[in-house]
Amino acid sequence: METVFAICVGVLTTGGVYLVMRSHTFSVVLGLTLLSYAVNLFLFATGRLSVNQAAILGQSSNPADPLPQALVLTAIVIGFAMTAFAIILALRARADLGNDQVDGKVRDDVLNKRKKAQGE
Amino acid sequence: MSLAEHLVFFPVLVPMLVGIILLLPPFHQNLERQRPLVMAANLGLLVVAVLLLGQAVNDGPSLYRLGDWHPPFGILLVADQLASLMLILTAILAMTTHWYACAGDDGRGPFFQPLFMFQLMGINGAFLTADAFNLFVFFEILLIASYALLIHGGGKHRTQAAVHYVLLNLIGSAFFLIGLGILYASFGSLNLPDMAQKASQLSDDNIILAKSGGLLLLLVFGLKSAMLPLHFWLVRTYSMTSAPVAALFAIMTKVGIYSIWRVHTAVFGDHAGELSGLASDWLWVLGLLTIAVGAVAALASQTLRVLTANLVVVSAGTLLISIAVGTEEATAAAIYYLLHSTLMSAALFLLAGLIQEQRGQAQDRFVKAKPLPQAVPLGIAFFILAMAMVGMPPLSGFLGKVWLLQATVSHDMMAWVWSVLLISGLAALVVFSRAGTSIFWRVQGQPGSDVKAHGLQWLALYMLLSMSLLMVVFAGPLTDLSASAASELYSGLALPEPVEVQP
Image (cartoon, rainbow over all chains, first blue to last red; front, side, top):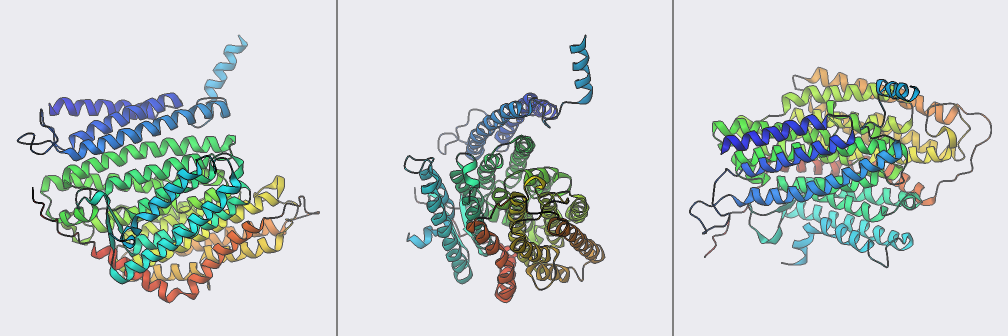
């Protein structure tokens, strides 16, 4: 189980990091979402993984650590709020700056290609 | 529990409640009613912070257990001397920047006043908390308020700066959580005093984990405090936003420094065995480079606001070096320097805002333009500020820097620190002379506008300036206070023994 879990976290992080480094705000927001999934899963693992163990004292012989679950809950709530904010800001930037690049500028080669396509 | 015991929670509770009240019908969208309430709240916060400092000095740190959960479980708030000092600093800064904002900047977009309160809630909470995860939560509160404050008033450039700032900080938050997760996995606790006690007893496997977690946190705090490779967002962000917001943000980089103190000095300090001095090797190089890059960028800046933002980077670098020295004396000096640099850079942001309004088209660029309508009072403020920021006697910048230099006298890195600090001071002197000459002397024709600064704006600016003077007049008690705050930080907090609970 640990291996599968680690692979999941790793794949999510890799995807997240790759997308975060893209230049369009849409992919960056998507990357952030993946990254926060990876982080949430990772936080679960910090309390050691166990199967079928309740996080309540007295309910099972070897209870799961409840603290990471509380942390994950908080992290999820905050993550949602922040992602929502990032999306709204990306929409506003799209309206204000006229493109959806993270730095607000369209690359020169892309611009030239666009001009060429319009000219033809 | 008596009211005095609950006092610790007030710096978080008051801004939150006031912020919520401001969103309710009688106050909602009515600036005339919102302003006095926020002013009263700021004054109240200052009083509470002073009371807390008194308590911390006389009776030692006051602990506040939320929900009465006994540490290391549950959330613990601690108001020791350092935290109370930071609270006082925040309250003074909030009061003055709020006065300035009330002169008209708060009406340029909706919800300025409630956001201001939520921002304070986050900052105060981050100073008070003694729980690493709760630190994350308060960081997010102050960040989400700052995102909205940053684009307050709107405009293309602000949106552009905000996109970078928000995305960078969101990535930073992800790293923060990963770091916290690793630390929890190795320590089994996120309570900072508890972690400090456990630091020397970790098993070998966990030490490697704890090291990587600690360094990840350094990365995150470095992002907040504008440490070298992570400072690029700061200049754009701070120079694009409105003057009162930029001035309030002057404390935000210091939140990062404060967190490094709490985690890397208190948890990974001298007592931590193999974990001690985890960050100092890195901080030397990064701090020196941060100062150098900040000074060079200050020399190259074209507007007063960009110049100020670059000087914020320089002061962050100076504080990072003091952390790298890692002695009590250096930390004490750093606390004094932190108070000074926060207040002065805030004042400079406010001054830049006034100059920008009065110069019309030329804004705060260093170009030839029409003279300022109120050149004399602005010029006096500029002169005082320049002396304070450069670190010339008799103002607080001088004392702070001399004390910092003294603290490194017997250190191996003394030559480096002295030369970089002194040369950066010289660079600041050069840029201020250049800025002053072009803004106040390279003028022609009649004043282009008849914009006069509001009385509240003068009050805010000169109140901040007088702080520099007060910090010199009361240098004796203040240095004693920062010295004892530093020694308290180093000695660490002893948690009360858990009470046995009968089932």
